[in-house]
Image (cartoon, rainbow, N blue to C red; front, side):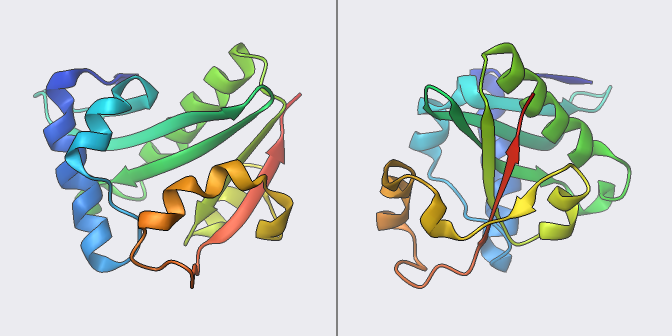
Length: 151
């Protein structure tokens, strides 16, 4: 049920991220940016074909990547879908030899259960802040930075 996203999934991913973005619980992404990053995404697809969850792994540096845009449709939370999507991103990071993975989140408890620890945002390289310039919350970011070392 978890697979890599395709171009045909982008509009459903966009709708899912926009729902949480409108609530202020996730930073939504423009449709054009999602098309640019389709290869970063995993989706959780129902047998009937609807996308009810998504998550992305974005490489930042030779040994650093980010788990981002992790969302599960509100009608399907608490079923382990988010954990499976996050684990898919972690597994891919390991396959690529990534040593550290981080996330910026409003749900630190979820990521703590997956072995992430809270860090100060200043510990992350400046390169990762390029997306922040266009964020509606810039420069008053209230997301929590978390990092996990991968073996």
